[in-house]
Image 1 (cartoon, rainbow, N blue to C red):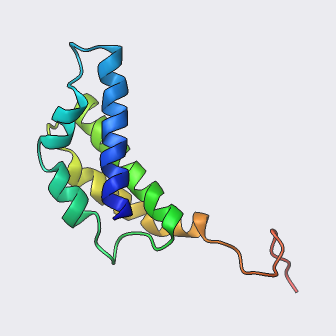
Image 2 (cartoon, rainbow, N blue to C red):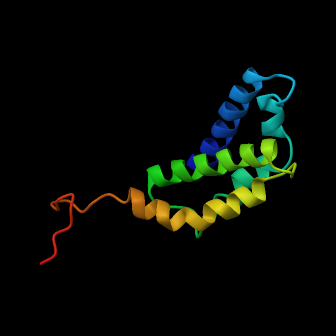
Length: 115
């Protein structure tokens, strides 16, 4: 449930900020949420267990990246629908998110010592 909530919250907040900046140039946040395949992509496509991160913080970061890319592609890209590309790009960096967020093993120092 964390991935869809993170995606939808990110799209809502970012599109809301852009809409507050210029109401004529940018669509309202509810339009961004309910248009296109965002709901389908957030609930069914982005939550694929094979491609999504494992850690709880990594899942939230993954959802934030997808939401950010959806807004960027829809607003400044030439495509009206950017959910598919956003999910593909986030899937490409999903293993790296887990590596960056992976908690260290209990009892080890922050820097790994070579023995």
